[in-house]
Amino acid sequence: MSNNTFNQIPMVDLKEELTLIRTPILEMVTEVLNSGEYILGEKGEKLEKLVAEYVEASYGIGVANGTDALQLSLMALDIGPGDDVITTPFTFFATGETIAQVGAQPIFVDIEEANYNMDPSKIEEAITQNTKAIIIVHLNGKSANMKEIMAIANKYNLRVIEDACQAIGTEYDGSRVGAIGDIGCFSFFPSKNLGAFGDAGLVTTNHKALYEKISQLRNHGSEKKYQHSSIGMNSRLDELQAAILLVKLYYLDIFLHKRKEVARRYTEKLNNLLKKPPISENREHTFHQYCIELDKRDELVSELKNNGIASAIYYPIPLHLQQAFHYLHYKKGDFPIAEKTAEKILALPISPTLSFQKQDYIISTVNKFLENNG
Image (cartoon, rainbow, N blue to C red; front, side, top):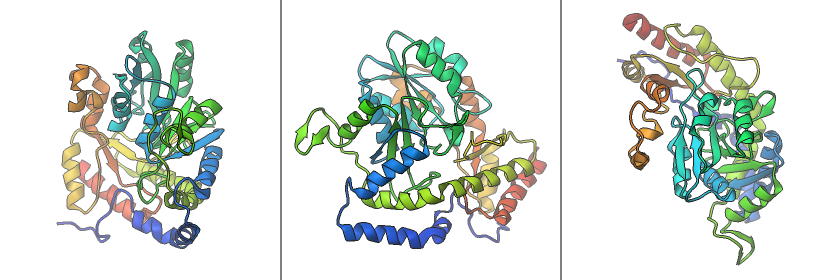
């Protein structure tokens, strides 16, 4: 029986967030409805410009979702059959899926135990004569080690795509992720740190030629209406989502600050029997997720659920062990750190609107479980 006086505590309280910004959201949406312009319009162009400026990139291209952002990036780099693309096995399925979708082969590299991102020391041994690119994932909002990764990419003349779908606003060595590699990919799925009210995404780059190519590819390979210079896809960011994101972008830095504050309290107050993420002074982690690790993970999930507290496992099965990738002939034991992490990791609720009272209840529930099951 739950002692929770707060009803259910979700992973991200989008309803509570909406109460803070409902009026400007409705005003902006009304502007779109009154304009009669719903696809590739003024709001989308403004969002592309402002997000590009925010991540310190030269160009932004609004697309339908984060998965399409990745696929369009691979297409723009002419990656296809016969090509290898290095990435991490510890990520959302879309990272590997899009590589396969363009006909290339995903080549996985294990992660660093400390931060769940690709281990740069293991990249070179995975490079073959067919390797064309590396897709880096800034998992949970934590920047990967871009200095070492970019050095390897430059050494072997490889293109770098940053999967920053969980990491808008994250910084590495003073630079925003999404503008460090050749292309940055962002998801605006509702639960993201900058979330739409549906699916939406965006691509950033500092290369004009890539900007022009992706802009065409997202619109059926068309530069002029009914003139198609390449085979593209239909992946356009609609004006309603762009309008909502323009409002939420205004609040993004405030919300990221609040997330970091929640993360700091978790790290300070949770029992040290857990593995917890460190909190740094700079913005190298924007805490899309706050993840802990423990041996009795599944038992804690049940205890939290019984007390009305949501939790989530990101991710329970590494990509190399997914049925869809059986044709790659990876096996259990190939990437031991990713596999071990998948068995222990657990994300706790985190959002800009999570009150300290609710957070303290979560912390108390976790700590009590650890005292009884340590």
